[in-house]
Length: 173
Image (cartoon, rainbow, N blue to C red; front, side, top):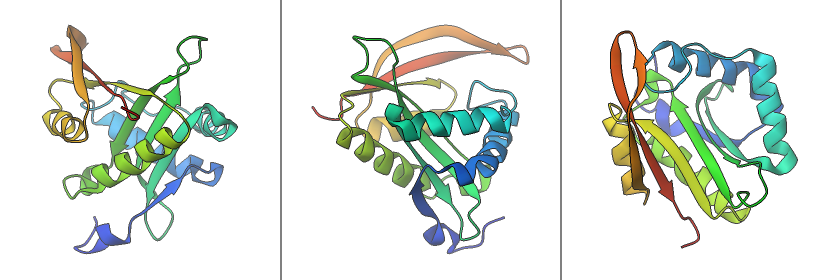
């Protein structure tokens, strides 16, 4: 559990393969909450390594929030869409470990990642967020994302439906 002041010691760093195992653990913790991301358990470390390599090869940007001990406590990635005609756009995903939410870390992480996406020429950032995740939607709105649509009852998990809110940002506009 972080102590007061620990949030100031969190660094936002560009992706690097040395963080693959820690990123995998963080992703698994958030996935097992069954509330915020589409996964219900984290992928194998090989999949996260492949994603990191994909980003390093120039297909997007990814930043990690890391402790002094180099443990990943959050991530944000913006990955270009692969098809010709859509490569100006990218899909965003992010997450924070429970103990690190609500202190502005998500905003820092997202701003730095958006700045890097803008610098690499990404013109449109898209995301989907569960309607029940009101704090994330509020953050995205504050940073300029707008709602483009809603997929009603998009997810049914544990007997409950949740809508998917589709949002976008035009960083260069």
